[in-house]
Image 1 (cartoon, protein in one colour):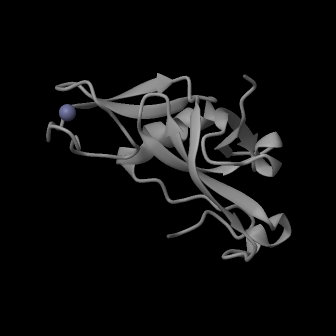
Image 2: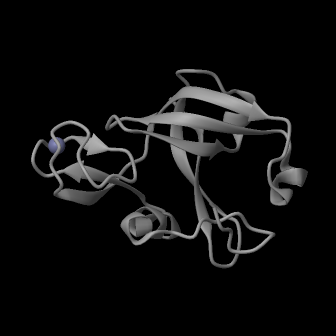
Length: 139
Ligand SMILES: [Zn+2]
């Protein structure tokens, strides 16, 4: 993976994934939905996992969901994370069904557990990039 610069971890975004990353900049959670069977899919797919259809449309969703699994990193794998240890990355199961990985922030970090309800949190990590993260949702 190629990073934009040493201070900010950001992927070299492929065209097929652009709506997902552009959505983050606009504080939107964008996922794909198969037009044939209406199944929501995790980003980024070119073919529907459910029916094999390839007419996938991007849609903004609320982004609520729950922690399906998580890991707390105590070792940095990139210099830009050295000062952020420990940090928590969770596999979030969105209300619509797809799962995606994201950094947990706020109250969600200390209180993280499987099944915890989460909401999207958009964190500005540089002048040009806002990252989709998740925080604990109030019940
Ligand atoms: Zn489908």
